[in-house]
Length: 309
Image 1 (cartoon, rainbow, N blue to C red):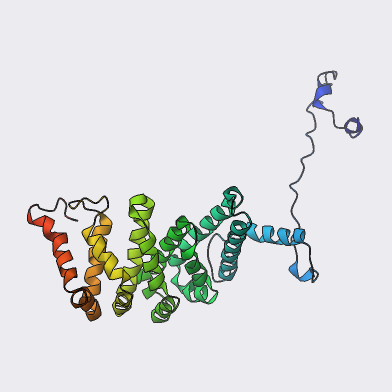
Image 2: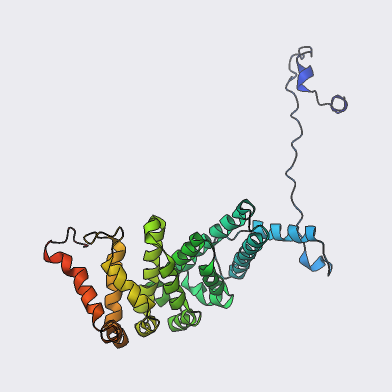
């Protein structure tokens, strides 16, 4: 009855009310609208030295809700910190609930979405130095060893755009950025990731291989002398040789994009590195030359089916 005393008539009683006199509206007053409760922001400066677990959770939740949509110089450090939180949360969940994937899958999805955000970084190369200084590159590269290969492939996609030769050329000091990429072992990590991918698994894996090869191509285009570095650890030339010879599906006459891409990267390596030529020739007893001849032998009896082939 409190609502009637307050002058608000419940809808259930409205039908029993007598008609309103002429000129008087019978429209019922609308019920009060509850305003959305705004969560009080936590002032970190006012927190005591020791805080309970619930308060810590509130702080982290509040930080997680502050998503960075467009990367700028002003918010980039916060965006990197946000990525680091996602990585740590996923690591903690995986350790605590190793036998129960349902309890860590959400943090993995959140991490995947967070990685996708960094594709926009390539739109503003001026942010590259700050990104590296804030440990953003280091964090992304650490994910190339993640247990979930989907996470690895997402990172490779971001790095393929990040290393685009034209984009790197727009940086204030491209050579400094290249030096940092090499210092953080991007060439080695890319080749190791490339070797772990099984293209037979599906289109995502095939795209992952393409992105790995894009990173190699981008680095070689920006710094041709890196051909020697890619050759030194042998794994890349050997992988390229195998891939040129063996198309996806195992059919000798089959043609696919990554087979072509591998042949192009192999040519670039051979053109820019005497060590690569020696490695694929003398060091393997000329076996590499024989493998290349076998790879193109199919065209002795048939013509390419497309201009790309």
